[in-house]
Length: 241
Image (cartoon, rainbow, N blue to C red; front, side):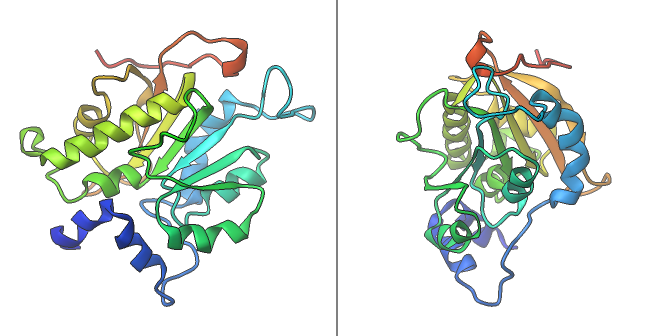
């Protein structure tokens, strides 16, 4: 993909064109599909909210987390999570073509038209878990991924706005999982920005073999007091200083 095309991925019009193409498949997985994610989710995410026979969304302990997919695209991951019993799913997407294609597939999932860089209508501290597979990538794929001082200003601005918004809509102690192909120093440089106070849930975990464009899972936790409403304490295995 040429840089000129990659630069357009930050715009809704680009995705409207991609997802309106009748030749494209009904679902699309970027970086990795649910099969590659399963081990990571089983070990690092699902244990934070174990589901039992008496799990309800109205319980004071709120065992079922409120999950939000950031730029959900045409991924089947929300449906896989829903099928496992994580039924409080919200998908945020700024492409009208994507929403038109995906919303009819599961009416129990909330499909909302939002640009994840600016979500004033999404309430603060309203989600337990935020998931991103390739949205961060779409915001900055066309910039250099190894020379921090050469990152275009618009990428720095986009990713900082995105990180602050994700931080805002998560509950204290909430978890942000970002799946992308960029190396740790690049990801941390762009996500751990002023206005956020992210801690590491774990060190970056490789989901594909080493090499160019290796896919990694980054787990971040919104620091803050853990209350009955947050549902779980953060499980910190490492913390970048």
